[in-house]
View 1 (cartoon, rainbow, N blue to C red):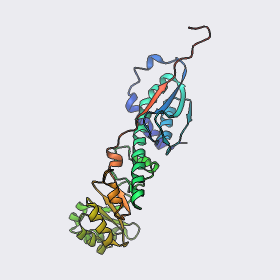
View 2 (cartoon, rainbow, N blue to C red):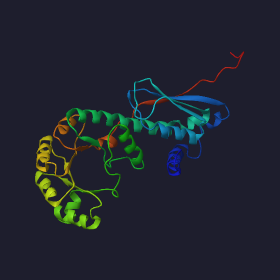
View 3 (cartoon, rainbow, N blue to C red):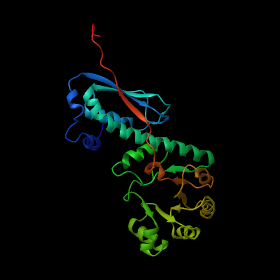
Length: 284
């Protein structure tokens, strides 16, 4: 069961590829029902199967059989699902379904890897950012959750984050926090971006609920965690990747947000294959 809004989005994805019609497959219409299957060519964490299924259904597929579920880790060569329907219609949905499934699985795979590194060196939770592909934020943040990460704010509307330019506009951290607190009251927590240990102290004094330690070294983050001493939630962000993640996780910080989970991830290699036509009795 899909929401109409989601169906509308997936139909837009299909329309981007189909345009005025599939001029490659149109001549093959009427050649009967076929079976296709999705196979992982590389090991990874699968995410996006429900969306791939719906794309094929919207394209005209008649039957879908899943062999794994989102969140499963698979080896190379694993068949993920079978899809049956008119052959030319399966081909019309193939690329759109693969594009989304491959990207989301790539995000989930990377997130799972980061979550494991962080867990081995501390208690920090891995979070995403707003550095997502235009139009794909909902899907990409879904993939982060499938990989074991958590979602930071979804947009400018659902959480307060006072960054460097907000602070400059207001004339200081204390003024920025006071202005927002007067507007929103106690309904929302306020996060403040700090670029130095002095700004960490200022954010604490202003009553920030969460302090983002932006582009600080692991040593600076560790010192900031000591200064905060549990008075606010701490988040490390900026320049953190797989190579230095363990050092940041070891600082005792509460959250580590990584734009790289979504903005520069490699898609997981997944293939779609169609079966050969069945020979009739007596046919050679």
